[in-house]
Length: 265
Image 1 (spheres, helix red, strand yellow):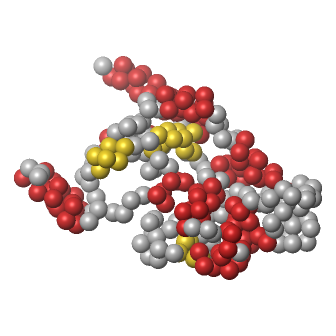
Image 2: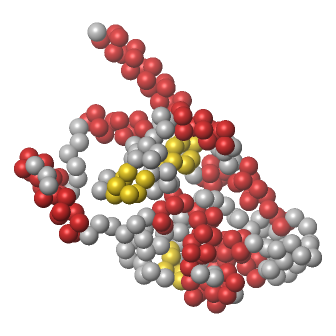
């Protein structure tokens, strides 16, 4: 029996989705833990609610958790399907064992929704095409594969594929997800990996780098800190906006700029 036959909290065999161990209509096919977790969050939690590992263990059984890294891996699977579930590494107001449900994504426990999401995953060839198209740099922060993050010489960037518009949002609009919606992102800027960000730098680590700066650079940094933002030109701001356009739209804008520049010369 197709698990998509019932959209309610109760599976076709009369058991809540989050309590299933075997997929309805089968004898031995295991009902995945990510599917149970998604169903429980969908029906038992509202947007903005906080939950803990112990709460999940009590509701879904000890096998849903295992060690914390296993839970984080399952949450990353849901994040890749449009769910936003920040942890304490994303939100300082949360405790280390807490997570917040920020966005409900694909109904991962339903066959059709899960398979529809998987069909949108780019092939290896498409990934290479997107990364080559974007100049082999993260379109969010600009870092290239193998480059070190600022202040982290041992932490090298790894490139992956992200979505300009989340897949679930496209599905609710009846729009297709295609290569024009895919963009190159480093693992740090890619949503499913944000829970793996390292802790913020400590004051003494930042101060050590500031002390090595020139007097002029220190003055500029002081100005930015007092303003609460980096001083940026109108060109900087418009460029940031242009970077968020689709690849095709960027080409159209480049063509306009080329024509405009030629006409003014």
